[in-house]
Image (cartoon, rainbow, N blue to C red):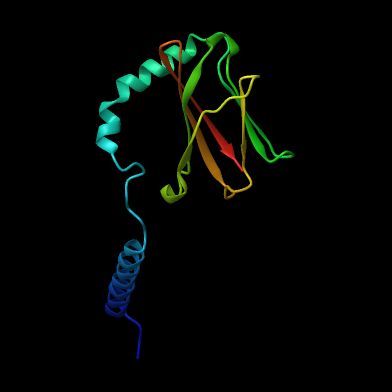
Length: 146
């Protein structure tokens, strides 16, 4: 039996159909959910987020976020001149929303907060600090690789 152009076309269609079936089956196992549950609500509230960013840019001393692998913790240092500080620290994992969590800001006398990273899984994390002081909201975000 000779291999002619008819066999080539048939082979092409068989390989193409097989690949399409493989892609469809693989796509059913992928999580297609949005990164944030309330995506549209977050989009509508972007103006408030923009104002927090603008307030943060006006600060002389902004929040500093440092990851110290030797001590296995994250240190957040807030500006002392702002006085009473309240807010939330969000740990956001872009690859897996089930690992996201938040921590309330609880500063010591040096306006610092230490967060252990021993329970966090290795990989990319985004630290989102949403805080208020002096009647103004502020926001700081930093990407960390643990």
